[in-house]
Length: 149
Image 1 (cartoon, helix red, strand yellow):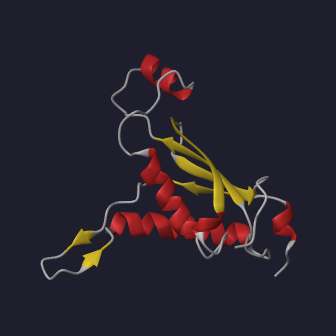
Image 2: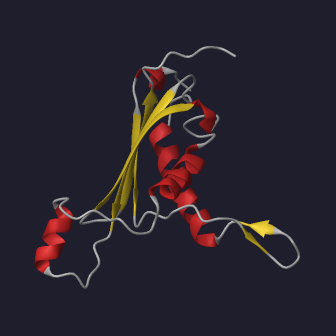
């Protein structure tokens, strides 16, 4: 494995509707589990991240993350409203919550792109409507200096 990735960010895309990290569910027996939809999406993120990282070492030190979530436009919307959504005049202010979308991706890249999500010091995330639903993620070194603890 090379170490050249530290010098440049890695970018990957996950096709399909972004899925927010769901809260763990608890069975009557007391056993907790993560809902299947969340697990499946995290696996998609892991696959995309693994393919993007081929031949590169994991990032170490302070890391920044830039994520863009493009959600599907409701099919019942008029052509005018759809056009406004595509151009960004209408923002998706409902579910899923941006913080839970972010959590799904960050959990998916852990141990593949970064060793621990504690190294992420800068985050920029946006949630928009898109023609094709997808998630675009760029992870790279942060300009913030790292102080060894």
